[in-house]
Length: 272
Image (cartoon, rainbow, N blue to C red; front, side, top):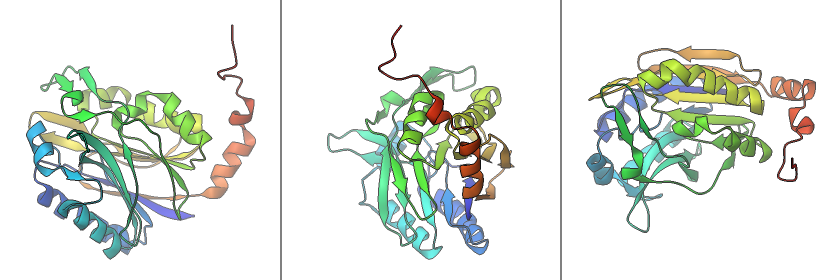
């Protein structure tokens, strides 16, 4: 068993303030002997298009990424930054999940596949991530000391086929860092997160932003869900942390009792 933690945040456009907020929570997780910490989407920069452009860095190279690497090293934990604005070679930006090991090394990354372009009945109303970020084109499962971790970001959670592929590629734990709006979160967050755990029989760590961020409002309710779909830890509102132990015996037991991957009859070969 390994202790894993989620940091729920109320991030803004100032990276230094966000990193200070994060550091306080990582210090606590370190005292609790947590081996891995996950932050929400936009945890280091949560602002306008201009903010993302101003603070974006090339992958693995930049002041802010160096600070994050140092935090992982200082607190001796695997640190998964839910998303960070990465400058691509073509001049565009990606919303990128960064994975630092407990030695402070950037060991992997994931560019968000599904870009949130939608109309929501809130004060922000129209969301156009495609005006800021380019979509990724690869899925990622990272081997860690805690287990094999499948990476996803926020809007990805609405596309179950991604999570089936993560399970097929050996994921034991799936992370869903997010900045779910209050409106969509209240309607769908709990259902979607638990469904991804149930259908993949993986542990799911879902870290969400909470509160107001200018005209935007996010839902919070960060949670850790076991492979049976039971919520084992939740933080509804407020900045803070939740911790749980990912039990490999429970993972194996759930899969052995109901071996859904052996039973599936849906494949590219199945026809009408």
